[in-house]
Image (cartoon, rainbow over all chains, first blue to last red; front, side, top):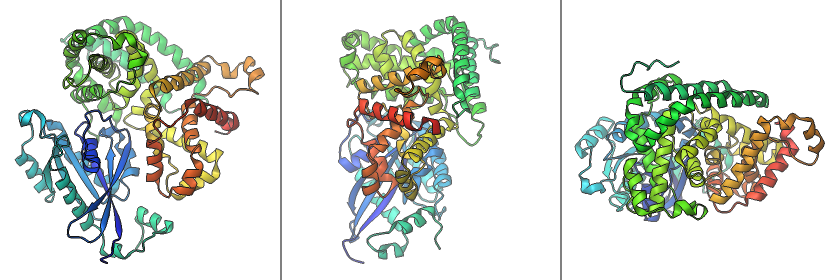
Length: 207
Length: 362
């Protein structure tokens, strides 16, 4: 098992329009920020290799950035297929974006329909903590943590995609949580997965 | 039609929902149509909508001016537009966005619109810093200090037109992607009221891309899928094997009509050709006797030229897709990275070729 094998993890980022999903993804993957990212239409993804410190293999993390407007969500099911972790993002300066986290979580569980609904790994990010030095903040850290606790202790991070604050730490946690969900046998699968196996997995009807 | 007429806040509640109601009901009649029979109805609808628009235009025009100057006027409209959204959506599980949300997202999208249009609109590019900032102030734009004056001006005009549209058509309101469609119109039309009515005309068809029930998008994705299936069964079988035959990978091209994949200039070319085809359909040219004489040499006009162009862009990459790609993700990435690599004339040639060869079978 202690080989240099590679595993692919699929992470979906959800949250209201303009909370900074694209920026978080780009900060993590490319370590850069721009205030000129256009609104994501549909979905896009980037891939990054990650070393989780106490594990001996390289992780390929595929991060899916999705459109923030709810009206396109039922189409999103194609993009949610095979997700290993879901990152819920809100803007600490916009109350509504926090209130909507519940909808995003529920919608994801309905659409992606993971095998273990109770224990599917989520991570919550409160983004844009840099804005106005924190003076326009509408959602307190305590309030966010209380909500996360009530939903089965979802890990919570406060981030600034603009300044790169806490993004790396958040993704370390995301990668670990996504891995936790992987069944042990996964690690012993052959290097090349043939298409038939792939299809079976994604429709979720094996065993 | 409009139950809000008692409102004491003023006339906006009477006139604007009236205009939007007629727009909505007109389009609802059209929305379920997926076949070529739509042509005749579309023609009738087009005439009808001109009348509707004209009858309400004088009222709305006054409103528009006040809205453009003072976006806060929109506030009393909030509740009535919410109501209509809820009833139209018909899905009580969905949380309906309110006007505040639209206002927030419009401003967000406006300030991150790029400056590609600048070389094509020298008059607007030369706007003074004072004028740009004044307009930005008037529409309540924020976080624009990093922008040059002409881009502040463009962003402020986008806010004015898009916010007016959200009031005019509350069933759609504002959805991301609409600023991509509006920006080229603003760049070409120097007056807000001209830009607004052009945008309304554009949205008459494009609004289906942003509907809550998603039927507009689904219909178009199905059609792209069908074009590929009829034209290239080998490629289609490969897509089926990857569970990608729903053609989700062209989603963005459909929603914003290739705006993200083409340059500003290329977009205008493509859109104008598409609009010319649609105008030809409305004028009944495809069915006229004159068409019979030239049809051997030219493809018949179609309402869905965009979808043929999208299918063409995928077919141009068929070899790569079949030989190299083994998941929908990879095809999506390919499509999302087409930006800057497309030749719009080749695309149109291929699209017309597709129309010529398989239009009868679609």
